[in-house]
Length: 239
Image (cartoon, rainbow, N blue to C red; front, side, top):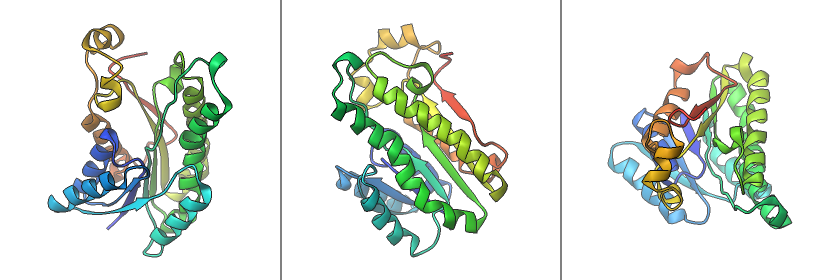
């Protein structure tokens, strides 16, 4: 059974991704940091539905902690699907942004990608099959007011996605990024009302976590073997 690690697996999008991958027959390692109990709930729900899952807890911005945890995970074999979904935003115009706010967002959203992905590459290369899927944002494509730190991190993730795809394409490993727009859930529901969504999104609705998970499920499958190095917008027609 192939194994998948989903960072930030206890949030709205992360939960949907974990459930989709488990339904597709993967063993899912559900990651959390601040709320490990939520990861436990996700894993329990997967197991109750007949799937296979366990949990792991670490701060993706803490390189040493990540390596300790992943070394333990790798004792039972390679992790062949990595979904870098953990992220945060801390919004304020750059003129008023503190150094701490800048580095915190970059640390989780960009350094976290390196900290999680790099230790898993040699075992994945040895298996000659792998999928690395980075969850980005429309902000990394278009920018967004008050999100210079977040947009910079996600745009950097796009460059890393393309470069790593070139490094791994001959090894049977694909690397892609999904850049969602407005996705229904706790975070977006607090910011966007129905009128704003109709004004901003040509499809006139928010996307759903299940729609993000469906795309991730495809990217993680054998059917997506020729698709790599892409930044895929999932945003209801925002161009």
